[in-house]
Image 1 (tube, rainbow, N blue to C red):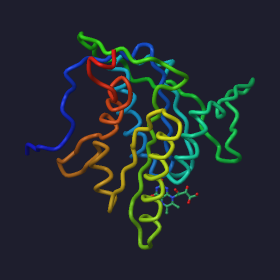
Image 2: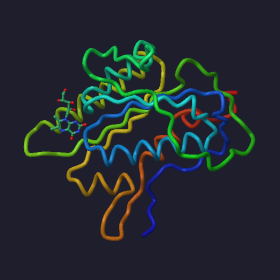
Image 3: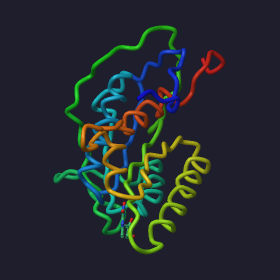
Image 4: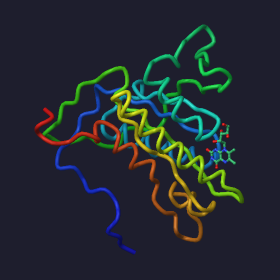
Length: 207
Ligand code: DLZ
């Protein structure tokens, strides 16, 4: 079935080869999270973002995403030692930096919009909230979405809202491209990968 929903293609191609992007994801609902993260990474690479410039970190649940994104942007999360990455979020056990194995599948065409790169050009916050029997879902959805907006406005680093707020398991699976009964659905992680720079700014005035 066709749909009018979804983002239209930018008329500008974006060169992501000089950009660094962090993905911070929750570990709740792992099967769905894994698919969303893979979708986001695949699209970042399709836009030219180098494997070594994609940093993936994890937190326990979606509620922890805003604080972790803020730390990631501040650069205080990454402290490498002989054993790898040390967690500076006090027991939240951030995951290690992990290059994703997905290969680059395409190259952008000119004209190119040049976007200055910084420590992180964007952060993609990925979580999957599934409604339960109590009001927990409503409180977390609301606070996390407001807080992620605040992080990007306060820091000036775009934070892509990659949080699924699903009323049941099937809704979440479908939005991660894992739907059942012949309806695989669409992996929204791909949209988030495209929404992150090099896709979030567009137009010749930004050259
Ligand atoms: C506690 C909880 C519940 C019930 N459900 C979810 C969920 O569906 N998705 C998610 O990402 N996290 C969930 N959590 C965990 C909270 O986000 C958070 O990690 C804990 O309340 C600790 O702060």
